[in-house]
Image (cartoon, rainbow, N blue to C red; front, side, top):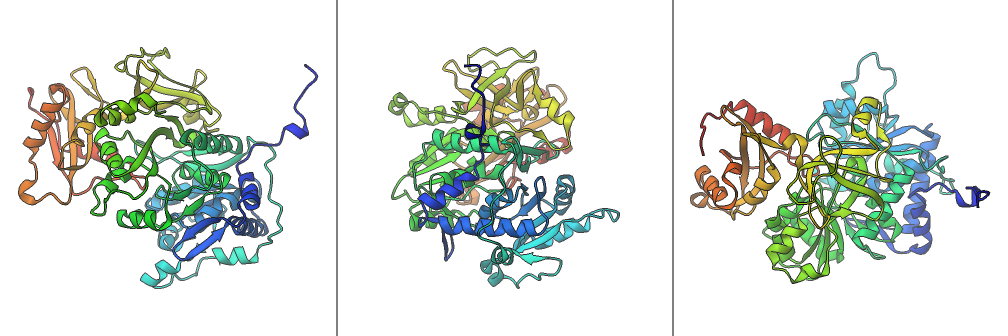
Length: 554
């Protein structure tokens, strides 16, 4: 068999771009994109993506060019996931909630040749460009994505400084354009910047092969059938929407687009379009359950959650409404979810609270991942006892190529044949992973490592608590102690609002005393990234500025 080698017939590069070609044939007349009063079919979506890719090529966009996008979940954002790499370029989605300084840094770091800008982000991008150094010769070309729904509320945005509009480029393109196949499946396809919840954003590069694997892997693991109706509650600019722009094309689904998350609108869209699937961070689940419109669903809706360890209490409330929650774990560096809480039939016989506790665990590796483990400081696997803490490591085809222009950053997380995630977790006896914290969020009090996630999970069980986050506050005696930031549910009346003492007493009744927060700070809303992750670095700074806690005994 030694003479049998890879050859042209069996070595076509893996790329998720081909999903759209197939969808245009198999699902030609199936609705692909729905946004307000606009509906496209899969055949039309492919045609528009080819036309746009043609126009990009005419503008000088070539292999390796970086094309950036600042847009919410609108049809243009979806189409750009195919059109940009169709032209051979690398897609760079940028978080629309970043400040102008950060956007400017990203555009320069990525060396973006062209930027598609949603009309609502026009001023943000213009300010970002104004921050470019005066001696920087090359500045990206701007293309404006117009939207009549926004323009009705505000004056139509001026097109000064913009070369053309999105629809202008689509209309000028050639529908017979032959899209650019990658030379290798290892060619870069997307560039995503990390959320920066714990550090400065890094440019994560994924190739065609890795994006293909994560797209198919997620469909299999979540058991997504053909022709789902998928509601875009997860920002596409976050890790390419966990690969679902490509995955939904593979199964001929219908993408329901929505500019921003609003619980009332979400419930309305679920009912109107018979939504079957949606994704979101735990904060999305929390907003759905706390909405005045949280009536039980007429039909079950599959919802995949990740991005932060979900409190069991939130999972319980969400499923009580008729959502079928699946829980997974991944990072920007893996392009999507590579660990999932694979559900076992015998668990259905357990009480609801116990089911929610089990579902709050991150789970086991998906079929497309090679290995996932929890290791100690010297690289050895920790005991599978649900108690021994270590760092989560993994390897597999979904892991990024590396960080753009950051060889030291890449080397620091690629060690001993593993990708070191920076997340702290435990491995249970049954082989299921449970994330306990980010390494920077572990609180070391009197020599004990405290998981802020565990304390938060208890706080979410309080009937008045809407959001909770726990960080370290300096302590003269213990070194650090838990400091809880809490927002309360809106329907809680003033006279019913709990005091700091009452929250602490609730914690004392429901967790070991050494884990009980010494400080509770009430806020109307906790600071978050656009993907719903609470910005703990902001809260840590607040706790630090409060100074050292001086009480030495509980």
